[in-house]
Image (cartoon, rainbow, N blue to C red; front, side, top):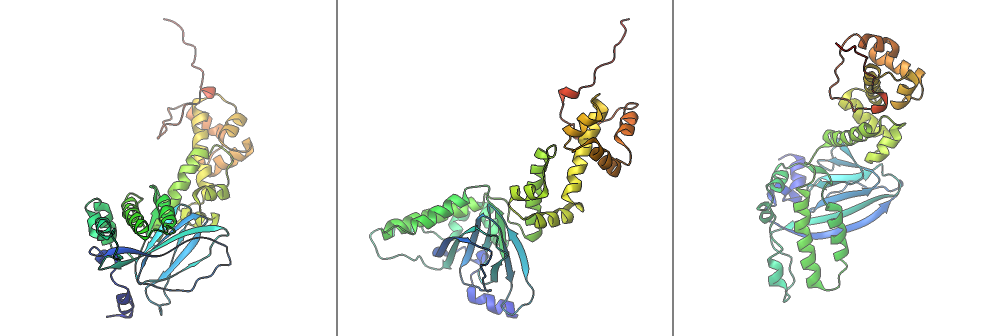
Length: 336
């Protein structure tokens, strides 16, 4: 048995082996952190959910305490990370005013129930994890993958449920508190199964890139900056630029420019609008800016492109949106 396995065995079961286990909420918090916050590497027998409600932080993990090999993943707005039991981890590079909600669940072989009159009712709802699999095959598939950590994008209502679980911990009635937390915990994991598929570091970047591309596609005809795009998807501009280079081999600015040139090509070939009007409608600051970009992307000037396109049919895929303002007037035809 290697060192990593020896250390991790202290914290079993892992999620893939926790089907027979009951999930007991052990620790929780909802805190706003500043950039001066530091955290040492640590591990614990609970598996952990860390939700970034606002801001951004880096999650750094390693397989054992003595290892020098670490892995880093950036977690941004409305994303959360589920950390398996027994792995050493820390938070770093936290943005100012980053809000993190945290839940830690301990897998146990028995229900943690007090001897109360409500205990029989609670037994119906505090169920082993495998009972939830009957309602969601996706949840079983996620946990059986046995990853060290999982990253999710919250496209369900995970944030709302986590908030409610933390709120219910303050209830004074022990029976009501236990029942409500049990019900919410079941709902939490079923909702997690409906979130975007669990993803590792590189795929996390792809999620942010996809979100950024959606934003770009809706706004590239306007004046937009990389900082604005990064803020819209909840990550730093430096990180987003890095992910774009890895995914496309291009900068964000280059991709925006190419999209504007495609739109300009459409208007040049399908309308009689003058150059300044086309430049303005495609997000270029001036005709000179459009001409420079056109030369870099197409290898010719806008006017040369218009001359060439007038002598042949130009097809665009996908079809560009119709802009009635610039529709080319049909030529007069003599009646036969």
